[in-house]
Length: 532
Image 1: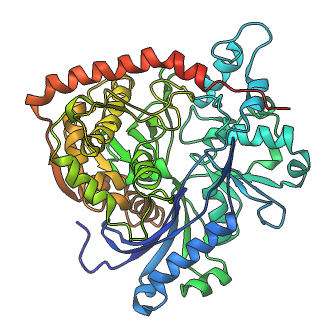
Image 2 (image 1 turned 30 degrees about the vertical axis):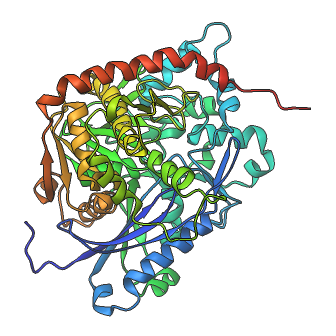
Image 3 (image 1 turned 90 degrees about the horizontal axis):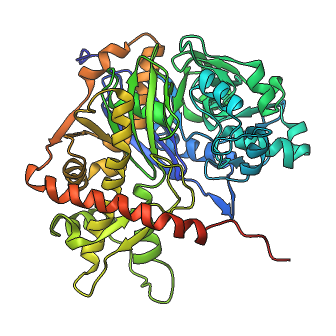
């Protein structure tokens, strides 16, 4: 452990889709305090946007709450470092000002623009020309999403559909890059924040660089892309106005930081092949590996990340905790004639209590958690959530349990190809994110997947802890190989052997549901021409 006398703190910033969380984190990973401010999402149809100014005001509010009234605490802050949502595109002008709203990772308007760039003249593989796909995979480890929901899709849409905006844009930035610009005045991108523009050669993880041919393929002017730095680079110091607003020294270094999945991986499990599961609005399995590798069929890849010399293997699930949010906001407490004026109780705590008394298997109910389609192990945006096998014998208690089990079944579904990419059993999986606070859900995850689940202390602050560790490495106070011993474990949940057959059968049923219903979902959710 670090010496007790080391009281240095990092102001760690965790900007997600729902809002901005700031935390004061010691260099041993302990969280001293944290605060949160919500941010609105503006969505309609394929469009989903956020106001960058809202991000900044939320940051100032949350950071101000932590720092405003405690001068000694402010004096202990030795660095500022951000972790943010990714696949978010901000167009900034030459003055560094955002031009309009940021394009969210939920925004699918770029699908047609990417399709035009990706397809070949004669033969196509899942919508990609074979030569183009080969080039993307060989150099980057991935390819632009056909949904248009990544940086490549956003940039292509701006270029094709908003030419005036494109001409005004000096740089295309991810959310992380924008926050760093506001903090220290430097325009740059980290090797993970620029990743899903799919214009970098990632074969040498120690020297990620732009590739001219890929830039031409995307159709963007090279000078509109920011310089690339490492996550642990000190990219400047706080701008005087920012330092004054926060009550921090203007000499406080700003470390480049990382996008959310990279920061979570640093906070959860740094050692090679050691797996983690993030349970937030969306979900993913991840592990650091010493190689770049892609499973194109299952949409899993190992790509550049925050850890020096390593790639991050990832399998993504579109909606995890979002299913609980949907249950809370659209079913239990939806604002209509049935809603009361009473304050909502601690809903998630109560759901856990209720689900715990329902027998494993949810009395035969099956829930598919595909509220927003799915990404791994099938990339299918037309899949939808559903509750199957509901009878008069069931109650909402069973539904609560089925929702938790449905996310766990989907996790097991993507864990199979994830293990193949790693080339080994995932072993004990470290659970982080808001959902990992639930002992009930961690046990369900262990029972359904058959893997031990390690619950850490402060799992909801994993992003912030990861950002603090990245800052610690950046200022020379820590090394990545020290971080495993700093991890604080609350409990390890072992899978029940008695439930192995039950959940094995239920998993087979879960996959059969997808096979049988996918054609129906494709028909129901096929794009329809607009009415005249």
